[in-house]
Length: 373
Image (cartoon, helix red, strand yellow):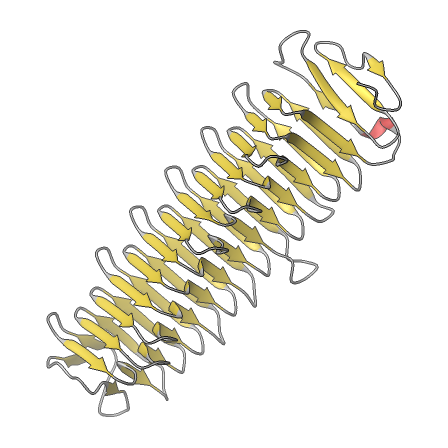
């Protein structure tokens, strides 16, 4: 072990045998530099920070490790230059931010480039760019009371499968910043009392044919931008919204493109825009509104386009158009289950070549071409 016991204004360059893992920056020690605060060009390094580490260089990092490395932060780390990083792990590695610890970076607070990355946050991660960027896949765990906030986005995972487990707050605060983006498929689990917000809340997939996503929400996910979507799965997948949970978007509450698409709702899914869609499945799929107090709402509550779709409703589906099944196929493929629906309430199913009115508790009470309502 090497303990850093004295402050420095010229930074530290790690080399063997001068330094031996783990490198421990003691409490009250400040390491600052107009270059990188602490840098390791060669070798695998493990750093534990209980002090303060900072870089003011335009492209500098509070800590930069160019081989696989591990950083544990119990103090503060900052990269304040215009394109600065808080922590840069250039060849993969892990970063843990303890409770009451903080890390900031102008470009990224935490960036992992050429290898899989693991980020565990119990404190505060902030950036005027992307807060957390994992360029080659990996996982991000954000604990209760912890926060990840970026003007350019909260969490970005590209290059490989990504997993985000959120018990705290993740936010993209900029004009078009997304809360969580997982570009090559994976899963996002948002716990009760947790929040993910941004121009769009969560986006998964789209950069490969196999980049389907899974989103399980027990808290709050919101896309607040003018064309924002609460949850957007670009290459198919499944969304489950738990009891008392909410997913909201302006343009769409939930949108799924791709041939495998399922939405199961026990809570609230809504679109607040003038012509917003609560749930939009671009290429067919299944929507289940699964409980008596479950709600799907929007100008158009449910739209299933492109291929066969099913809607099973045990709660409330409400909009200027409740349900639209917009595919020219035989009537036999669709079903609209209306258990627990008020007797006599009308549900409207629209197809390009016919309209079907479902009136509880009967199954099909009218078939009216061409959609003359």
